[in-house]
Length: 330
Ligand code: GCU
View (cartoon, rainbow, N blue to C red):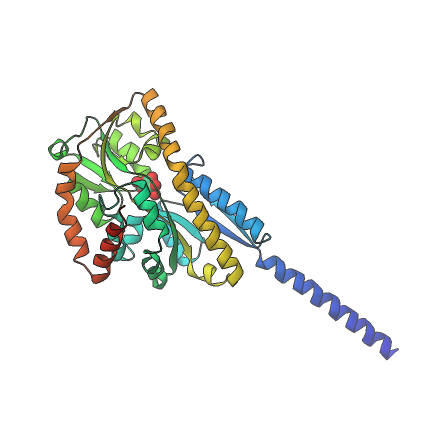
């Protein structure tokens, strides 16, 4: 009889152990919540969604992505803090947001530092930014890659073709010191603000305009409030993909390698898709009455030179990064 009970006990233990192992496997399926501040039609959203599908397939479901578009989880600054605390796992944030965590990032978001999309793609895929991207680790997150957002241009109620056209014009910029200084050097009054507040601020006369790429200009219908889009081309700001440290560190080496490989592919694909998105956005803006103005950028380039000096004088790393980026111009 005793033997019978002992056998039952063993069977029960084996079964519960098997159940536990299964349970553990289930726990290991990780959902990565990603914050995104633009719509599902944005090329970065599409690149992320494709990345998520490939990640789920190639990790056999161990990692899936859940993207929340349209700033549902808050503006970029708020979502960077959510990633930092681990409340969400990932976010796409403009470089100026990360500059607030680590000043060294200012250099990769300087006006006119990239000559073209090709130049920017070479910089993003060359590995020169690797140490910088890892340097936010102390803050609780790292940068796993950078998407392009094309070139940014000033839009307002009139054409802007020279710095003096911006005199007294309050133009919204992304939230960092460098962005504010840049717009001031360009001739206007840089006004840091979250992207989602710009439409109403212009409507109410708090701002005279904004600066952004064609895709966001159209996505947010800013042509309705600022119909002149002038090609100052002053910025090509990296959009940084950030991930919570603990999430990255918990990945097995194989999963991490898959994640990195797929991220690099997503970045190249997103560069390829960008030009097409710009053409489509421009057509919509024109249909809705916007005017695109060509600009001789030389005076703007001259005006922002002191900012290059200020930022690169901050540290040896900033200077070295600046030189490495400029050396990649073909
Ligand atoms: C672009 C960029 C975003 C950024 C936005 C802004 O759309 O891709 O990352 O949030 O500009 O001006 O805030």
